Amino acid sequence: MKLSALALLLISSILISSCAYMQTHKNIEQWGTYQDGFKVIKPDYIYLSQGDWYIKTEQYKLQRHYPIVHDSVFLEIMDYKLIPISQCEGIVYHRISQGTATVLQRKDGYATLSTLSKEIERDAHCGHSTLPHASKKHVRALIHAGKDTDLVIKKPVEPSPSFGVKTLSNLDLVFVDTPGTIIYNIAIPFAAPFVFFYSLSKDEQNNPILNDIHKEETY
Image (spheres, rainbow, N blue to C red):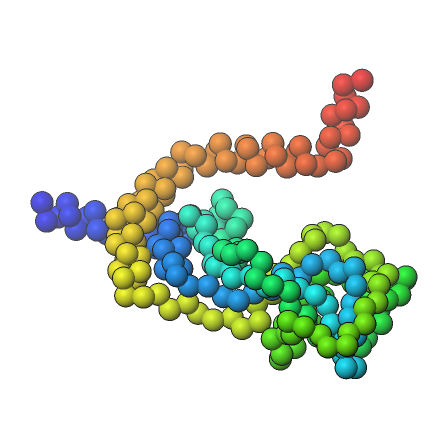
């Protein structure tokens, strides 16, 4: 009996230390914690106030969310993402450089939301809820339309869960994530072929060259 228990413990340790594991306990650790963040929106205007240029952002409370399974082989998304857990809490204006403001006002200008986000991150100030005596100017530059918003965290902080939340997280790790990790790793060898062919089929469908070839073959 002792040998069986020891063998099970060793097998569990090997599986848990593998490249795939469940991590629902990490989401439990986020209960009651959040970070102040700002959503950078594709701007129609920029604002000039007291010699500085600003863009408008929306303020939200953001919370980390981890994927249920961390799998470095079969899953692409492994790190946490930040999701809003509140309605918009107000408009905040963040400073941008004179050079960026000039580019944004030009018809031949070009910018991306990630560029604007980086400027906001570099700015030491946390923004202004109002801009006294501000004037606004049209954004005439081309803004990359890959996505319409981007999230910025001005002051990243490590969440500090309470004792009760930490206890629940540890219980979830023992009774949910540990057995779930064992089951997942046992099932992966059987599911791998189906995942492979599904991914291959999906890549073919999203490949315009292959789609054109298939269309030509049907004529």
